[in-house]
Structures are given as C-alpha cells and as structure tokens.
Length: 402
Image 1 (cartoon, rainbow, N blue to C red):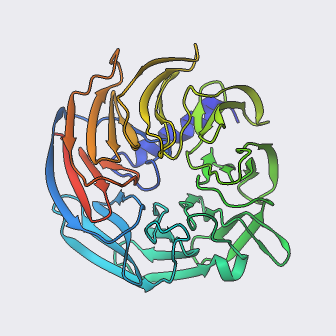
Image 2: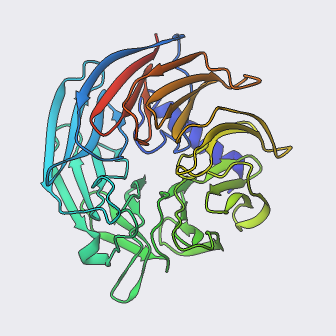
C-alpha cells in the first residue's frame, strides 16, 4: 500500500472523528490533530479536575465523554466523565491483583481504545475488558495470562488495544496451545479469538494500523508487519538493544515516502525502515533516542523527547532530511507531547505544560504552565479545544483554544 493511500485512509478517519481522541495518540495514532475550526490559541486555563488513583494510562475522548482507567486499592476502575463539566457519568470496577516487580505503581499502563460504542481496556494484569460506552456495562472479558500465558515482563502489560474493523488487537507476548501468540486478535462483538501469531515477547509499544489491511507491531525483539485478517507475517526486522534490561516503548512513526521511523534508548537510536519490506534505510544514534515518549512530525521535521529518563531528557526539533538537530529544550526528567495544528503541546514529568509553535527557530514556548504534580508520564488527549492530562492523583482539563 502506498503512502498516499495510507494518508487518504487516515485523513478520512480524522474527518469522521474530528472532535474525538478515541485511542492512544489520537484518531490516527500519531499524536497529530488539526486545530479546532474557528478557534484560536489562548493562554492555557484550567477548566476542571477530578481525583484519580494510580496508573500511567492516559485518557481518551469520544461522544463528549472522557474515559480514564486507574487503580484504587485492589480494583481497576474505569470512569466516564463529561468532557465539558468534569461530572462523573458512570463508573466500572473489577478486582485486580497486579503488583509491579520494580516497585512502581501498580497500573494500569495501556491507554483505552473506543470504537463503535465500545471501550477496550488492557490492564497491567493482562486482562482485556470490553465495556459499553454509554453505560459502562461489562460486555466481555479475556484473561491473557490464563489463555495466552502472557508474562508479566518488567512493568506489566502496557499494550494499548488497536481496533481495526471488527477486530481488537493486543500484544500479550505469549503462547496458546504451544503456538506463538505474541500478537492476538479478538472479535470486537464477543471477545472470541480470531487469530494469534508472532513468536516474540511483549514490548511497551502498541500495535498500529497500516491502512485497513495490515498491522505494524514493535515487540521486544523485532518489528513485525502482519495481515490484519489472518495474522500472517508479511515482513519482520530485528530491532532491540543488546542489553537485557531495556524496553521499546515509543510508537513507530509513519513518514513520507512509505517509510517508518522507530526510536529507542539503550543505545538503539533512531532507525528509518522502508515499507512494506522493513528494509533498513538509515540509522543514527544520539540524534533522537526516545525512551518512552512518541515523537510527532510536521513534514520532514520531527519533535520528540531525547534521552534516558534516569539521566534527563531534552525536547528536540530534528530535520530528518539533513539528519540534524535544529534546537533543544533545557533538560527535564522526560515528557510526552502532541501536535495540534501548528503548535506542540508538551507536558513534562515535572507537570509543566509547554505550548510551542512548530515554526519556532529555537526553544521558545509561548506558554509554560504548571498543570500537574511531578513524577508522571501518561499520554495526553485533546478534544474540541481542551487538553486532558493526568498524574498519579488527578485528571485535569485545560482550555487551550477558544
């Protein structure tokens, strides 16, 4: 499939869901959305906040509802909140016994996905739940530890579900009946298994659609391109750190020219591969080594947080054509970002929101506002002029356009 056809399919998705942010990194899973029509950028203003439990799972938005999953005591809790007022609409909970091996919070990690009136939540404990969007009623559930021998890994399961047609796809990194089940597809209506494929361990990136017929997954050891209908492997390419204590967490980014960019820390660096063969085109270490945040693009300019979280990160502007750095921010522990039209909205691990024009010649934020507590790294959501962000204690709505 050509890049032009992929782009057409994705722009169609944007047109159909312009006010929604229904999955990880938004409508097209790339952290990019057009600025709201007939609205202008303003100095960020708090609108509402709501208390939460623990977890790194970011919010999603559909039909005027913000959906957030978090952990309260021994329960996984999913809440629907009115996007404009912050009023709770419904709440769902189920028991969970996940305990993080490294002493971090006990999840959840994966961002929910919303499609066709259903919500899909993949918990750190490996349980996949499907709920009704309007009522929060449980529709079905799959335990991937029991059914697919999903291992806990370093930090539990963090794959955000991908809904593609009538399938919901996750990456449990397990096996079933002795056969590989690194990637699994279920029927969205009833949770029945459709296929399982790929002999690989789970990573911390999530599956992404390549048009309507293929799925790209970056797992622990390799990048995989699969047929969405059958799970058949079309191409694969080994890409991981040499050291054992490492993760692939940043999402692949689709580039022009039918190329895909992948980036990780731990001496992996930035890699550009050709689709659909996954043939390596070029690689460079130290240019943009993404520990967990996913970069966003504007043409051949890419913006992302570079560096290991333990050592500090900088937000960088990179020219992919010249393979040069244009500018970088002062060091921070880390952060996540999205692009809304011609502006970056980045939230650092220190809880500060940066609003930066993409055309800036240097690190020149228009606004720097404290919106969260420090020590968090959840993905952001944006809908109808409002930015939604969370830390380990609260969810906030910030007006950025009016």
